[in-house]
Length: 330
Image 1 (cartoon, rainbow, N blue to C red):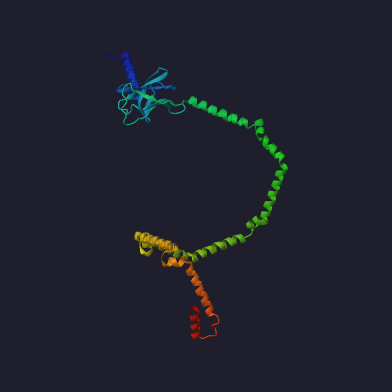
Image 2: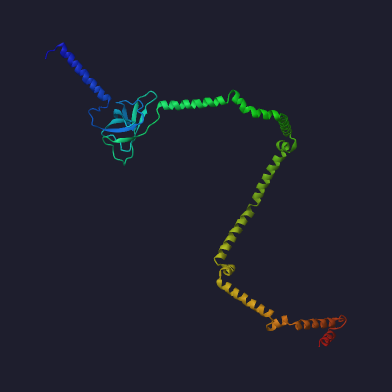
């Protein structure tokens, strides 16, 4: 080979081409020499996305945009992903940008771990986000709303808003002046210690009385603490007594819980009722005595005879009194 100028120029240009190709592959992630898979996603707007823009999974670049074309009223974006990229079939794709003037890229989500991994020609779900122009349009709308609101509080509109309030002040000026004057007089009297509220504010007697009352209450609480202790003990004993009675302990407990005693009491009451019914009906000796009118008449006659026999016995002796009574009775 001749070491001519043409040969050296040819070698130089070949080295330049090979270096440019290698540099392009390094910048592009070596997509040409690596085996990847092509997945797709459809968007409503490409948002200045270009072929060669990166595709990132959780912020880590895993591929590049290969093609962008229109299909069925949507923008279909083809992405070449690394073979080992953990992109699942339920992963979502979103077009984002790194800043206000930054580069656009496609952001992928992991998806669920149980979903199968995406293969070639898999169409991923997409999420469209508002672009910068839409955000600026909304900001312009907000600014217009604020401007309209400020216009309503300026000039004639503001005077219309305050007009009724101004008329109210004009119509009730004497009354409002009198009210303010009375309030000033009341505050002056209170500051000078006049009236009930003034005395409460200026006089220390109420404060001293309150302190004395609290001191007395504390002393009374200390004095009544033993009584409270005794009361708690009494309540505890009463509780024990009630529990014991409910369990059938003691005389009262047996009276409350013994069914035999209840049965005997019910039987006795029934028998007593029957006896009273017989007495009222005139049966038996007691019934005849209670219901026979002649018995009551004889008792009255006997008492009358005793009364007559005792008349004039104050001056007689015991033996004479006995003989007199016996003679009167028999």
